[in-house]
Length: 365
Image 1 (cartoon, helix red, strand yellow):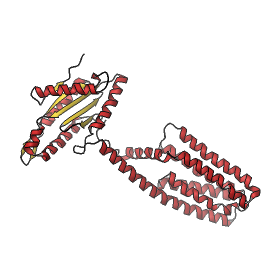
Image 2 (cartoon, rainbow, N blue to C red; image 1 turned 90 degrees about the horizontal axis):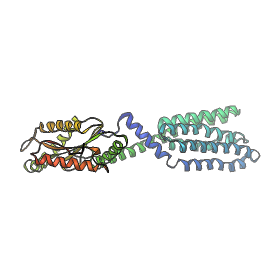
Image 3 (cartoon, rainbow, N blue to C red; image 1 turned 180 degrees about the vertical axis):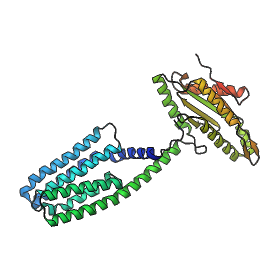
Image 4 (cartoon, rainbow, N blue to C red; image 1 turned 60 degrees about the horizontal axis):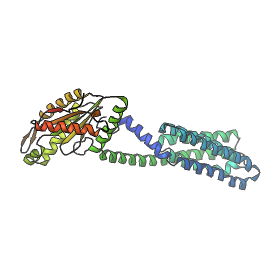
């Protein structure tokens, strides 16, 4: 449980895509139904231009709507709603929808000529559900090849083929341009949300997680230890005579001390551990998979590392020290706060016994 929680690289991209899939699919069922009704609604136009073949065209439109709803049902029923799955299902749409729509207009008298304008909806729809220039290009090419294939199989004339090629080319460019705008806006919004979420759980002075985030992690680790019989340790420590440092050297110097103590802690703990600033000069460390004896040894290393700091300020050197309390996370049978109380009690014993020392919690063996 590292205290640096900013997703970077592949992990950040995966987090963005998973979050994106949930955002895009939040109203996807409604959109699928509306799009299906829109496709069926074009049968009114079919009857206007060729009533004799409108019933045959309607069958193709019903098949298209059914395919949309079937693919949407696969998404609704899927347990792991990843962007990869979402992308694959939408790309299935980009084949089935133009196939059904093209067949519907192909059975009409001059339907390929009158029905070409229908496909503009497809190129507006693709980037709205796949806000990625790469995916919009893929979807546009798949849709275009499907439409062109049906047109050629139906033996359409050169005018229809030329119109199809022009429409497919312009539609794909339009889809890519629109998708690029969608993607930029979504990435910007997602990035701002990540920054806000990170700030909500981060102590801005030290860069550590704050008390709220630490309490969430400690509660989760306590439940895990209780369920699986694992060990974890909680350390709390407090900088000695920190008020005196602020009074004698100034609050700016105090801030420097806090930041350097935070850096010292980060250099000592493992990636799976978490260190937090939970008060003014009070810190806490969560050590998963760690018995209390090992936690005590880490606390001693932290004590020595902090004591070795020598911070030059305008009013002289500051050499901070800290007092530590260590307790097993499962010390309390009701919640992790019992362990925090025991660690706090050990910390106060360390203060009473002269400061700059580590005290272990008194727990029943």
